[in-house]
Image (tube, rainbow, N blue to C red; front, side):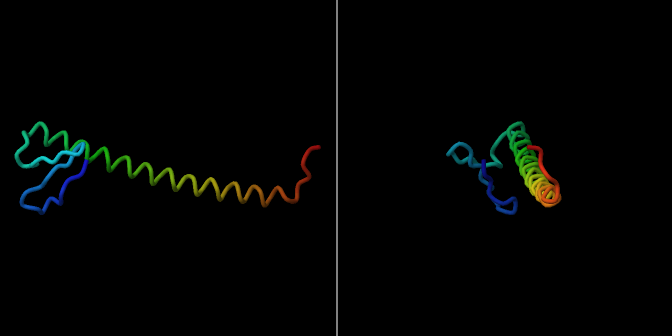
Length: 75
């Protein structure tokens, strides 16, 4: 789902390969579009959070590996 910038005089919704005049849609559909935009933004935010957590976990694993170098493992 894509939408042209809000500043555009005739915003266009592109959904599943079809284009629609956003201003010409009923209010109910405009609310659905806004809901999709919010959901997309939340997904991007959580994807970014997952990336940060993965980097942090990687750093912890590296630190653990460094500290374990001086410890003799079990046979």
